[in-house]
Image (tube, rainbow over the protein chains, first blue to last red):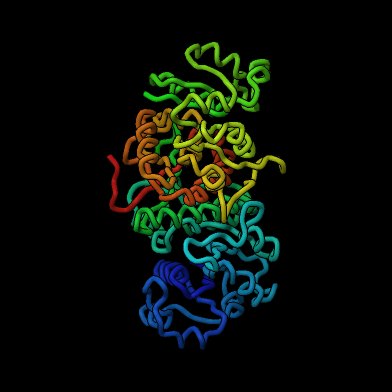
Length: 234
Length: 234
């Protein structure tokens, strides 16, 4: 069991924090301003309850500023909106981040042109790479950003084999993150290590087809599976 | 059976032309300069034989300029390199293209920075859209661009279910293309219609993860499958 700081109080943060806590980990959710977050009463754009209401059903989970959460954890999970991720991390001190793993789930979605969103960063760069470059004291592992939040922590919601991608520069950090994915229910043969953090370009660039699939299928409960000749999963 | 113009003499063009001909269609392969194409003797970067050598084993297939091929066909298949697609189409007259379906398989890959390639166009635009906009007399259907060329025309090379995407503005043209995909061996439940031609942004943006998967898996013989909750394929 480990101490996790989950950055972000939206659905992704709630799913990750809830599941990590349920598995016996210590979880502190980080937010910009705790008072503002607790005062919010409106549902989000998908009809999910506000953070304070969700928290009532998760009494073991702590809430703090980004800095407080980072300083008290072993592993940070970035569930902020992609455009806000750099600012959230900058509110922590370098000493709060040093040597820690950052699991980066954020996507640099740009909703300024309406739906479907485009990407703020792509093609020759990615959010994962920008975070790794700006915070060299962190070991950034990009994963889980290519699917619905509920599915991230409960892969059995989509039957059969489907894939979770992993990108990062540090083999040890990726090993730790793969262990966390296993604890969520991901089978080893469905965890696909793409290589270093530059491969996050590829997985972040899956979002444009993800949003179109959501439109075509009328459900977010689907996932990519990489079907490989000569490699049959059980 | 129909008359196809296959634009492009590389592996993708050879795979498509060979399979369409094998299925009983009339096929004319279009190229910039027939004499130059026939004179080439070097293998391509993947070790595939030059066009003239391949053609010896496909005696029923004709070769002509892009304009000749376009003028004699019902359906054009764009298998050129993405950066050369617009020029290839511009060498045909509007009257050669009018009312015809263009099956667009090209990807706007940019190898100028080495491997892995980035994209020349992406995010808020796509090659499929640019072609449709520049040639409104064509009915552009983007498909098959998310996988290896051999797999396009023989989906059984990867066992189990996996997905071929279809994007285009005209339902009738998409219906015709889905029929051609079926003739290649694609099951109806594995053909996923994403919507209009703007959804080609999504499928072209699958290429960056495709090239990274090729690197990680050390084989091009894999494909994306969209695994959907509550929708089990046979």
